[in-house]
Amino acid sequence: LLDAKGRGRQSPPPVLVTGLSQARALIESLPEAAVSLAETFWPGALTMIFKAQPSLNWDLGETRGTVAIRVPDHKITLALIEETGPLAVSSANLTGQPAATTCQQAFDYLQDSVAVYLDAGNSPKGEASTILDMTDLVDSYDAAGNHSVSGKVKVIRSGALSEAKIRSVIGDLLESPVS
Image 1 (cartoon, helix red, strand yellow):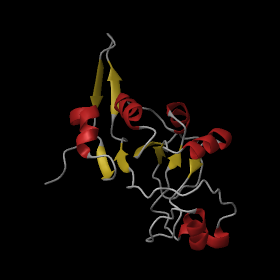
Image 2 (tube, one colour):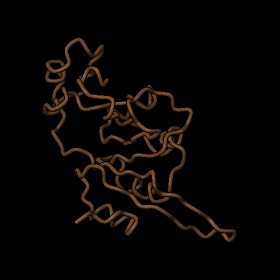
Image 3 (cartoon, helix red, strand yellow):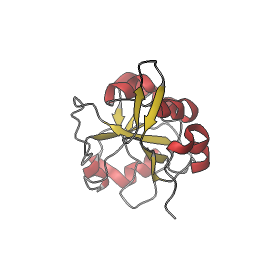
Image 4 (cartoon, one colour):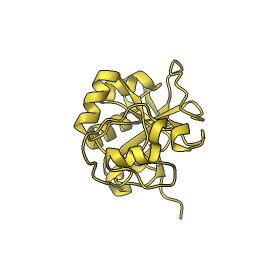
């Protein structure tokens, strides 16, 4: 995937899943704040980065032990993931070029570097997903079962979901922007 796009190993692709159950199989832990975000914004334009399960041995590039997870808002893609399991993906373009919105555009960019093209019709060109780093969050429970959270959520890339929308779900767990 990285070679086909002309992309370096320092920009690992996200992994698409159908929901929280598939996500749990790929990540070390799922903080309650991430569950709340997923229940609010998935499927959709939210990508969350977590610490990867040690057993996840996919070569996604230089992940530093993490994996980026997203649930796409596209019925055909979700059906494909149901059949295949989680998929490492990227926009269908060469790095630095606009994302393809048709199968023909994808073929024009990638040619024979891709073995199979799935034509699901024109894809509306949308804004990129918002990417959040969830790796600093740790849920804790005391003997009485009371929940507390340490750490902050960091915005890695601003996209379709505004910080205000994210903050409306997780409040002060979202790191304040640097002024």
